[in-house]
Image (cartoon, rainbow, N blue to C red; front, side):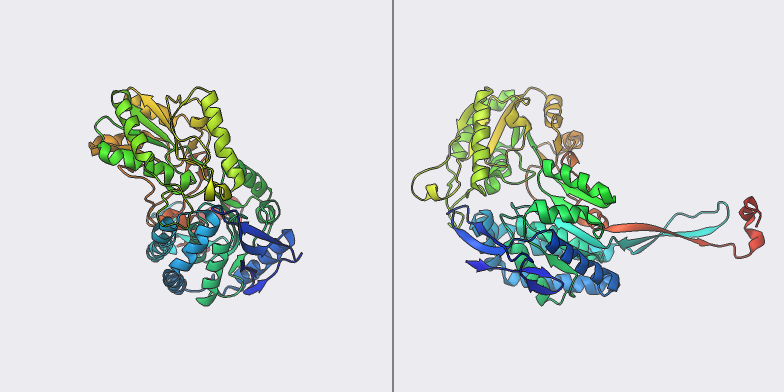
Length: 500
């Protein structure tokens, strides 16, 4: 079993209570890591360390070119350890080793490099438009770090989510306190090790493991934290926003989704059908922007359903550590029960199972949390399985008659995180994409998130953006600086209002 400590103020420390907690491999049910069970006092200690580091200025006053150099060094060190980090991600999060080693972990340094190049292109001081009222003045915007950023990351992509949170904050001169998910804390601690090796000053990065009700709530309510960034469920995101309001701190939220994939009549089904399944079943459907609603024209509905069934039934569900597994387990027994409950709700409300719908049992399946890839047909968009985020390998196929109706169905959701349009007519696909109220729309693909471009949600899928220049600016305050160009008192006629 792997043993970890928290990382606070440049030191590896136990929880102040001395308590620990174990993580579980969802493929086997076995304990794989032991980490500190931090509490509010641990979070307070970390916030105090981050505050000292920020106020001391060693990091925040460091030239941006030097911060970029350090982050690039971290990216290179990650590349040297991809296989080790991928194995831990597979053990704790249940990502298939094929996914973690070829996609999940290698993507992180690529995104870091994109952030670094983008950071160098952003001005720290930006001239504002010419002004001559009430007299000529020179005005500029100064972009400055918030200070201490509390960052709460989810269990589905724990490593890259840590990168998405920490690196923009650090590049812009902030200090961070990170709380990983209790199911999957180890790769965030591995990242802290790498950052220590790269020479990040003490107190700039702090990682605390422990329950969200203790560590997470302390970060949200602490007056010592200037910004909260959270990725997770919409339900918890609402609570984060409420708690942060007590100190009126900056909040960015990346929350749930119920993304729609719209197939148009002219879609190339040889691409669109496997593409829709890639959009749904990657990581057993445990991705916030997964395309869990598939909207299909009536004219090709039966053919699409036949193709979906045929391809899905070739997918191999197995241990995440097996390179031949297409889908691994869901993350926990609780998540497995959630998926099974939603399947029963779908049946009760009148949807029909095309394939799947059962927990996998027998042999090694009994040790873990495996569920068949599941497709419902004859789904109405008002059904629970089409409206609520399941976070498991469940696809709802919905019939439509016109493109306008498809857009209306796609937008009939409290969520707006991702989506896709499948068509050989690109201008038409773009026109439809612009009508969908969601943060990202892929045309003839899914899940391809690039570090150069913004990612985030509409509606109850979140607030703010990550990645790209927009994601970096989320970690900066904007200060207006006014430089007067009338040096003599007699030129400042507005002083007459006060009579001075």
